Length: 184
Image 1: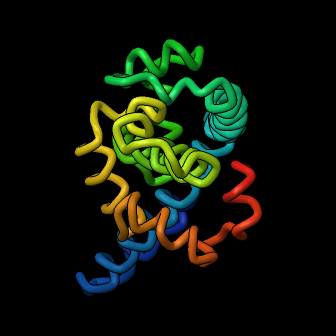
Image 2: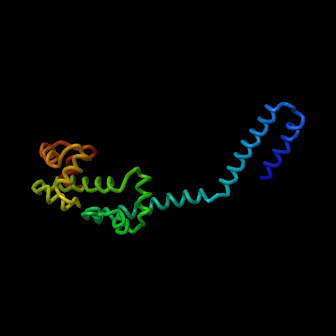
Image 3: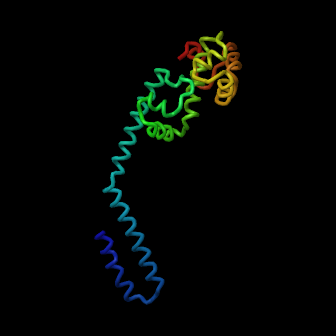
């Protein structure tokens, strides 16, 4: 603030001795621009923004660990799993889960669907004899129709076609066939 006053004092002679309104306008524009820059920088230095950024990074790490533990327990396989219940099962608030998903560019329903489709892929490989109803129930889908629709939307093929491709020895996206067959 003191720097802004000093700058104004430097611009006063310009206003007094220059009779042109254009120079006066430029002088005030420069003053306000410089005042804004200095004031913004001082606010940033005194604000808790760096602490908040560190806390957000730490929060994301904590949420990531909690989610990984929940996924390892198979928490996403519960049928009809709503976001508040999932957050409670994970051990975090719904807000923290939503924020974490937003940072990853995902929505809750898309994230759960992706987890369940991955589970279905890992279930189909070692259990080719299971029906779509059994796979849907195991993975948390409400029924086989939802499994088939969601699987096709995410993978581009039906679970049956996926199984056929597996039996032909074809590999998928980022998984070698050995990992798919062993359920890894």
